Image (cartoon, rainbow, N blue to C red):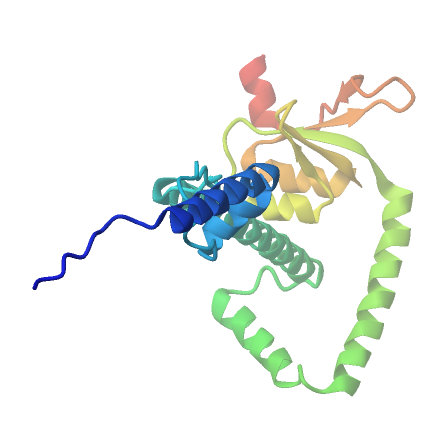
Length: 235
């Protein structure tokens, strides 16, 4: 005799299973947040019947968005590096102008390049000697103090104009004479010694003008003794 095994679930077993499913669904409805977390972690018990498993999906950043953010960060870093390099270049340019001014004030500017370079090399040989550096600093400080006292008695507000663009080396000499370029008015100006500026400006047909004291910044008295070539052109 063959035994026929029925696949029909026993009524008691089915009722218990349905009761368990109903209880589970009720708990799921009451504790939705807990179920969502359990589903995401993969620890939800099996056998709870048909459950509406709504999983709260966290927004994810796409690869394109991440690449875009990375490119933005790179652009900001590149901009910061460019600013640092620009600041360093400006500081170096300022230092070179100061060095050129000191060379001129020391009376070494008229030396040819070989002689000037040799003199600087001689100084460089003792640049590591602290006592020598201290002596140089003391002598330079005293000389600058004397120059400032003399300049305070002879300087006056001046403006200088030139008919054409100037070489960089000559512009450095003008800065050494305490003049600064005014981008708005397109002339050189500053407190300087009149005779020295006149001699310097004559090298490039410049016109030196005295600024009248007490008459406002724009009141300028032209000096008739400067730039004769240019004065002849105007006449």
